[in-house]
Image: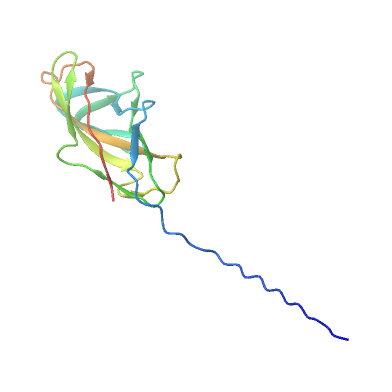
Length: 162
């Protein structure tokens, strides 16, 4: 009697493909939330109002923060990029804006810290986005230079893909 022994061997391995090629990031301003400093009063020579990336607010100098129904908030951006993409936010010259008042006067606003902190790594695949919150510092002068009213303007946030 002849016995045939059949041995089957299954080989399984995982093949790794090369990483996705770089692609330009897509940044969208989330209009549901813009940078807002809320209501405050100048009691002397001025100071600053700071919106932190966690959404909290503080002041320096002769500024009193008020809660008159005017909300304060960070700016919100949505970033779409390949996972593993490193993003930095530039600050300094070019990330400053002049805000004009409806009753006259101007104030300077400097782009502040972000959450997640810069630089950060994208961890979700498109079409999912990474939400970035950006604060700022508003420099306020005395009441004659900066009369009460609404101040508005635009500013640039520079996202750099590394």
